[in-house]
Image (cartoon, rainbow, N blue to C red; front, side, top):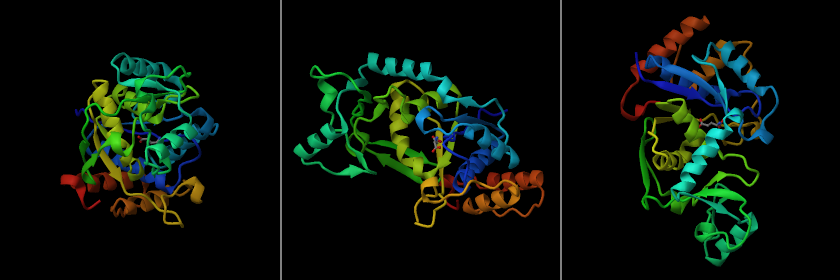
Length: 297
Ligand code: GLU
């Protein structure tokens, strides 16, 4: 028996592509290598972005590759009361506050303060509504990111020591959007804790969210899982493979071809030619590689 619980959490905005299979496979292998359990969570909280039936399609794609969850999948769209309860808890502790600012107001405030830079196209919120709404109506809810007022540090199993000063580098981030939908950061932290996730294995593009998630875990009195961020598959433009830059839906009519491509990204070389042997061999290779930070990955 082991306390290991891992997960793969796709957003059902379309079918899996070669890049998403890398994260799915790595999280599955890590769970198997630790004799743990592997769960699938559909991150469909942002309902307007979801594509009908792509959740079932993704589950089918995973199954074709032999990646079958150990428990019934959960859907975030059915868990909104949990997110609201967490937001209420943060608000009661003075760690979440309503914000009335529109994007153009935030932009104007940043220009006034001489901080017109953005981060990944996002504005770094200057904390305008920390002191109250000035009679305006609340739009979104934000997290008070300066408690504690120091950088958040963590050890990524592949990337090594990481540090981010969330208040300075990200600002007070959104917990609940103006349309009432829980933000990814809040939903993922609530669900990882509710599902008892001990190890998060996901794509490196998400590494930058980890400090925010750790701050939220601390604010909600939740434990922090171990994190491992996997290498990304890049598209023709050199950026992370995504639907926007031409990623094709994963073709699972030849699952071994798809799995071999994903394994190569993870630095594995598996020679087996039938699916169950392939998965056994890949798990054994992954298990051998439990070095500090797993630099070979
Ligand atoms: N739903 C996110 C995505 O598809 C993954 C979130 C996570 O693994 O924390 O990019």
